[in-house]
Length: 548
Image 1 (tube, helix red, strand yellow):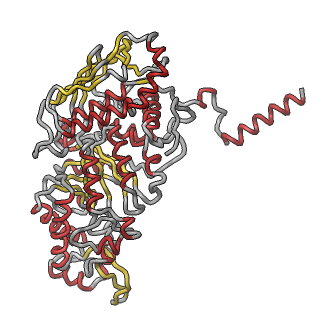
Image 2 (cartoon, one colour; image 1 turned 135 degrees about the vertical axis):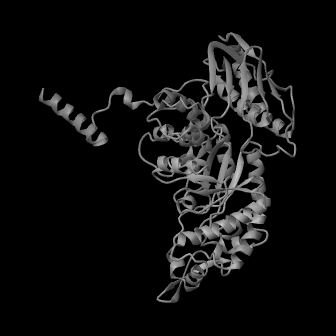
Image 3 (cartoon, helix red, strand yellow; image 1 turned 180 degrees about the vertical axis):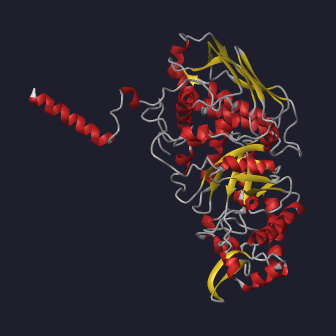
């Protein structure tokens, strides 16, 4: 009896070492949510599956275009054909292996084709690129022998193809199977973004593309490219090539050439994703000043320059001459209507120390209100952007500091207290996106995706008119502690929680109910070659990640 008690106490002590002062876990606590099979993420607006099961014959299945066609649609179909079935040689090998089991399939029928019907012309001058107002709705019917996908636009067809690919799963006999399903779907919000920061750590073009693939698999439609910052300037400017030559981390190997940028923009376009660059000013510009003389404000101590530099100097005409040329180039390089102009975290201390700035403040009758100086700068910059026929996004500080901006400004709310901020900004009549609750770079131990899933851009007490001004939101992965080695695994599948919040119906909000679909979706991403981190606790995927 004493020996038994001693062994039992050792077991308890060992458990205590592992789990600390928490209660001993139940058996079920060791297991993550059991994955669903063939259920989509994000959840469609109307999703009616049935128990009736169909098989897919890999060799005979075909996509049929019955409406408008264009190179963009053709590329999407080819991409999903390979994504679903793999390379043809691999398909042939699988067929040989499973040829006997096909005769004993338990399916109720087979899906032999998917007809894709896009109603509007695509790849025209007007709709070559996705835009804020693009229609992404689609209807999908999975039936035997033929299934149908109908959309107004090629962008809606892309979302439908993604959903179709997710409805396919591997049956017990090794065949691809689908359930009879009817879907009517459209996004809840028009702006569903993901920010990556390529200034604090350089991210290769291949990694940017891989992330764009993941975004498409989660129905995101905006890549917010925080391309430069204080730390480095990897954007290669045609007019000012010295900015990347002197401001990048390590020359050309850590620079995005014009060809690189064109490649990324086109890769995103083919997936229905907009690329919105951010060139944050007047702060966050230390890397700019390495090449552009007299752009940054000289900081003073005891009436003398101390060798440090602050934000862009808003008091000299040369600043605006440079900005007009620079942003004129940016407007041509990036085809989206919007540019993110930043405007956050502007420190006034250097401006306050500079005697030339002080004299300018007196001349402009600004007194000691440096927020007015910031407003002066922003209004000049916005006039330049307006002259380029571009729209713009800004961080919330510009509004918080009392600046007057154009009525069509899009304000990004990123700070704590975002509920009150959303109410304040929309009361002023500005379109708004939310990112405050979706900073994925803040990591923590355990299952943290629930908090992202529960945050809602409509989570404030506003009128319907105010709610309508909230056009969406974005997840942010800032780059202080991520680079090529970990940005994909740290972002995915946690960003998928944000993707569903921004796409699915507002009543889809039960994280516990969503967990089995999230588990399947993580495994789906792994099967597609992504190092998608475990987020539901101990579990497994039938096809584990096999490395690069």
